[in-house]
Length: 394
Image 1 (cartoon, rainbow, N blue to C red):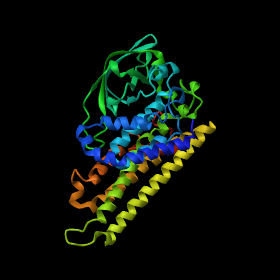
Image 2: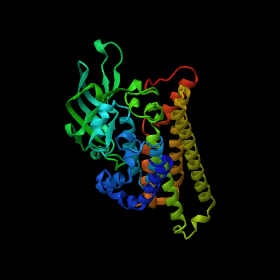
Image 3: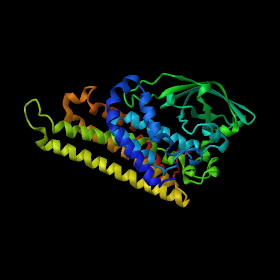
Image 4: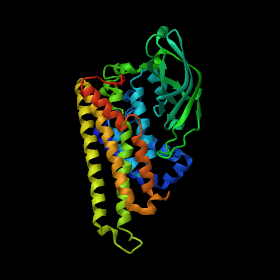
């Protein structure tokens, strides 16, 4: 296999090359509430979905954060496209933690099979039947599910005997045995096709299950099958890297668009806005915010990859700091687009203007539970002040 850094750079270059066509498709994608089949095909040909997929099953098995890098570049043109490309790539990473028997079911006949996830069960019924589970119900917000063949669902399994809290388990389901309901209508990330998965009495054998509390940085059911640190990383501590890329890209794309706007037109009064001091201040502030966000993301990613390769333990304070700082990166992206929006005037609110879409998408990304600022500060404060993590999954 080619050098992993070179392969990652190829993916970033392919994402950059797709930028113009993604810009052309963005408005229609929002109307359709999903990326097009052409975009999905472009992503498959580029190899985005296989970035973190185990090499044993046809994946690239790149370093963690490769998905962040190319999703950032895709997000510069269309955040919804960046979200779908990056999040489906991360699902290949998660599937690599399942028992090898499950991975063979997914990819044994077709390495191009993509996976969806949903961490939001609603009205779900779970019954134990020996070592198996029987599940029914609805799982919401499954991004890109229409493009996928399998899905990883969060299932809260009642404690045996009804004593104690439920045990969170990831269950792998064949989407051919489920129903995908067109339910996604959102102001931001509107083209991610984050529809609902409806399951009617699916039997989950043991090899298609994975206890969430066993994904905190130790060996996983799948790590024995692959000689890579990827499948031993603490899943929820590093998960925000899978979703921050589109925000970084969309905010940077908004900055690019505003600069083009300001250097190609005059105000209604005839003034040259590119010479106005307050305009300079806003451009400078947004640039500094985004440069800082990129730098922090790169620094944290480097730490995680280095520790993962060395087989070092991830201390709880480090896990909380990853979540804290990526939450702050999301805040920087929001602050940047908030700073830039007034420079576009009324035109920036038109649906044909890229600024309004970037503004909506960046704020939508920041609403993910893995990035919400209040949650991350509370999490880190508890850890740093000696009270432990309030989130047992960390």
